[in-house]
Length: 171
Image (cartoon, rainbow, N blue to C red; front, side):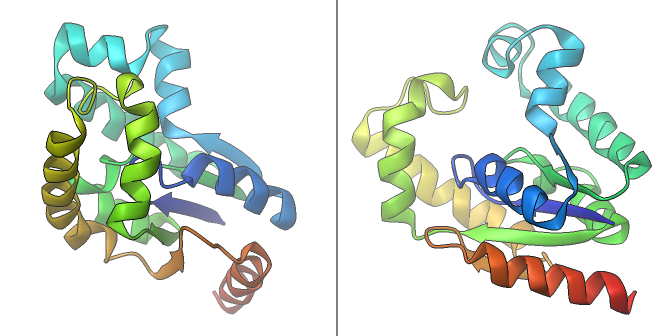
């Protein structure tokens, strides 16, 4: 079984993914880390040098390779579900879980780490708020196609793991 975690950047997909994988006794992979390991370049630097479009195509290829994994929790990038057929692929390949956040709380997290995020690195507080608000409105269409939604600010990992176990035994 593959569990795909989706949600906006800095929503905690990697942190929750590692915890969830431990509870389920599954492996864990992070799409962004797989990209950086394979291409030996940070996503930030790749965006700066080549732009978003080539990144999204490579990201899709990496996502599609996760179909070979078994019993793995997969943290997707914030934009992964929003391009090509990625969300459809995710839902056909495993269980999808959306880590949903209230925008003001997410903004606090993003402001602190924005310099490491290619889409946010040059934004001040007002610009960040406007950009993130619009971005989440655009992306929420894809995130909401997930099979399950959890409160990203206070995820109950034990309940989520139980829900996943029920689903995996039912399938």
